[in-house]
Image (cartoon, rainbow, N blue to C red; front, side, top):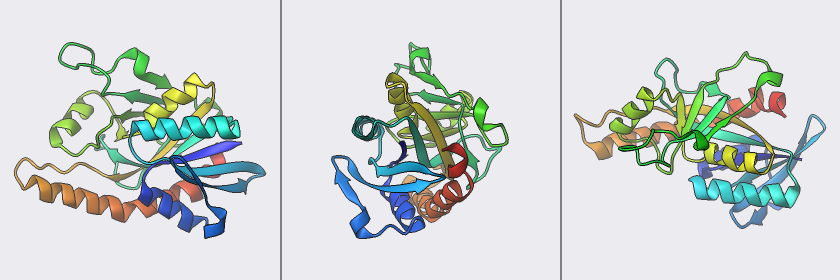
Length: 223
């Protein structure tokens, strides 16, 4: 069985709407809820985990054990970092890194032990790829955005690389499919709360569009 891991409430709500899931098809588990679907003769379990690394790892470890998953697909939104790309572009990263695991003043920004390389060779190469950076805080402040750019991060989120890390520990294949919902807003010359509000509003507007694009154009290919 393949698991489809979805973090944020708005991402999961868009998933329920896309697949027209009825109330009696949804089941609770300690980190959220899940439902089942069959696509291309493959049994899938879609589940919400909640946001941030601890929920993503906990929810996925639970589901790997409960359903004996052979593959996890992490589907959702991300912040754009590489400004060569735009909102709503979809990525399938070939490298997942956790960048909040070091004392960056005296250690490398990213340690090798927190890097997961993802082999995509059997899926072709006609899609956007790159490095996804994960930390327990969202990329909101401009200084954080610039630091990620300087370290060649393509997109960023708060769960995916930690999920890839735990999948590797379980010898379970992990594929990450993420769409850019927003870019950080430069708050240096404006009200930082207003800038953050603007970014959140863009995120909320684009989240259903990203999820629809992932499910309609990418999911079948990677299961």
